[in-house]
Length: 372
Image (tube, rainbow, N blue to C red; front, side):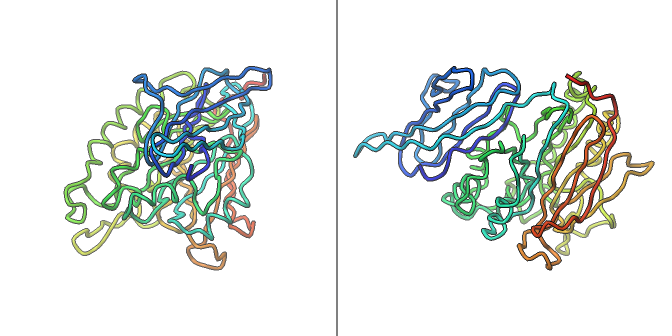
């Protein structure tokens, strides 16, 4: 094993577990629950045991919402000298839409900065979900960097006590090896967009693509985000009509590039300009988000912590986290967002690494939070 088993793609019935390996290996997950049940998960959808020479992934599930699960990864080398590695046990809890409380954390734009990652890991408490909101990397120059960037950043186990949802940022789709990212990032449906309920909070995760049009020469014809935005627009109309999302007390959107910004002047891409906000994404999704009742869009990308309150034209607020610097005095200082929901409010608190509150946004429930 070259990383801890990382708990990703949290769902109401389970998780995906992803970990790095240094040679061709097979793997399985052992699990236990407080009521004495236990089991092993090893097979994939095609009847094969999880195996690979760089990364292993096991999809584990079948538990009730809100179940606390202890799990560990067992890895065995295939061929050559026998090797077996057993990870330590770690605990994760499945999502529970019936809960009247929730807590989530948000990181963004860590850009492979080990000092920043260590500091974020140290200050972020256990939560229901850690949303890593894009730009984990600068660009993928080597396939070896996926493990050290996604699965063991700064040598840390970032999913210890906080299952991870990864939002794809524009830098995460850059570089020669970017097409391999989905080997290391698990999502509930195998797509780079998803929806989940964290207690009373309905969350939509969207992929804003790049910060320039698909035909920009710097992409060398390797990206197709415009059809992906259209696909997400159709999906949004369907998923937000489902009762668990249409009737949720709180409604939050996560996407890497903001949908609103301070200065929305036209961009000259030919002169080196790029999008500070994604007008293309907003044009595709705005009507569906307004119809759903989205209250806030949480983003990164600009490296400038910012809060834009709702307006008549944009009934959702825009909250943007900071940059990659560990120095709190920097103009691009890192932040993390603490989201705490209860029956009376959802409070989003933006803090820098020193603990100073930069923004605090309080949202009232759109419908009464059921007390269970």
